[in-house]
Image 1 (tube, rainbow, N blue to C red):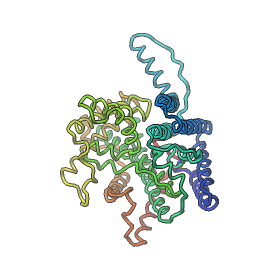
Image 2: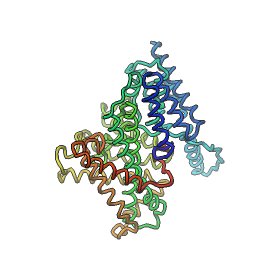
Image 3: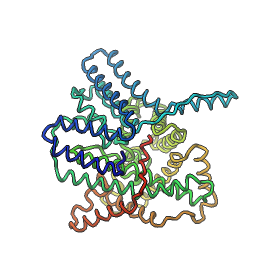
Image 4: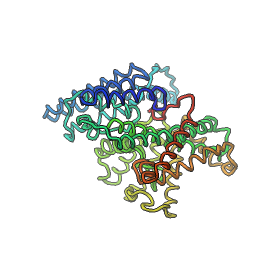
Length: 479
């Protein structure tokens, strides 16, 4: 079920009414309703994959209880590795099986041996990368005694399957989200209104910005050999805004929807394209995944505590794994490798935590130096996104060669003026609201009611104008 579908437009009000007006006096019934609703939401794609999420949930629930009872270190490690092996085993099988088989065959072909592989027609379960990491965080935190294991299986099932963030994040930690299922939740108009504003902004990002950018980005990337360098650059820029609008838009809708039900999720995007270096970019882009890898992979490997060799090793491991997490294609691995190269000089110079505050704090405009740093970081990010978007490595190299050719200085053949204007105003609003949780959180709070409602209605009109008859799925559903 897509957020931008008629199905969800019917589903959400029904669940909302039942939640606040029928079962609101009983916390257990509220949580049960969320579990049932979440399974309906997830099963809308393919009900067969419900067995996977139920199995993973029950497994980690039981392992959590066993970890509490067990004091022997060897037994505790056995329980932990059972959870890791089973959960990652499902992920590897469904997401990477054919990738490994194809690369195994290709490796033998390189030495003149031809093998006929037996690949499977495997369908990737939607959101498996997200809920796998979410449930793993629970088991690991219980193992490290950072979290008391729950005995309330309904709350745990609701935590793993919570429908607003189930299929594309944010990847919530059990330490933040699970306790919220234990507490009685009261309806607050201000919280719900704030959630609706964030949902509205998320839909603008997705429907108006991302979907329109996707149309032209796909047109250019799918026929890259026939376009000039300037047009290819335009295509790369459109994809850059497409993936940001698409993914951060989903996060905004997910977080806003959660607030309608009394839950607070962590911020997942913090205006990453205003970053002044690549380290700041990764503190602001897909925050829930970046911090997950930091806490459960980078720090256990030693983080930045060792010598230069360990720092370099850990940096490349974290970015390569992050790239591979996104998909079974060498383009994602190279994308991760590029980001590691971008990040490494900052780490070695101990400047990876230089830009912790919002750019141009308490100022209207950035300084010349800040502007240059933002443009440089943005440009490096665009180059990396080309690998992320390309079908394969040869496509990415030919695309880059096409950009850096003499035709770069010619007029682009694709010039959708209306979209460029929309992106321009979108950037301005994001810049004005860059100090906030999301761009329009408090920008208009002190304005007259007529001004606020005019702005909200303008967004609604734009969403309806640019809505497509065919639903366009979110990019990160494929991951």
